[in-house]
Image (cartoon, rainbow, N blue to C red):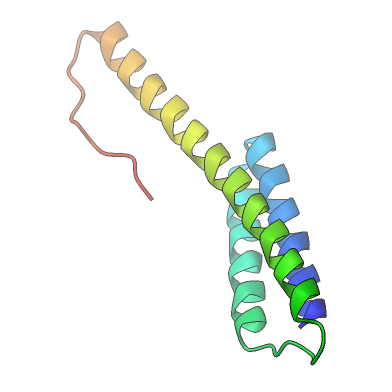
Length: 101
């Protein structure tokens, strides 16, 4: 279980780095790798006597997930602003396409 948790943490770090770098290809690759790591983690068992350590690791991962989610929301907002600014420069109206995930 601990090895799978380390994998999740490593892939989360890679995702945050890709988001910070605005690298679409790296974001896609990191997201796919993270999804695989989470699937493997879900099937893992906590060793007896390691429950508290597992909870601490899970809390750490949840904070990293929140950090990644914040970055995604910021990038979504920036993209929406760019689209709206492009329409304003052309004098056209936005089609109201929602940028969501």
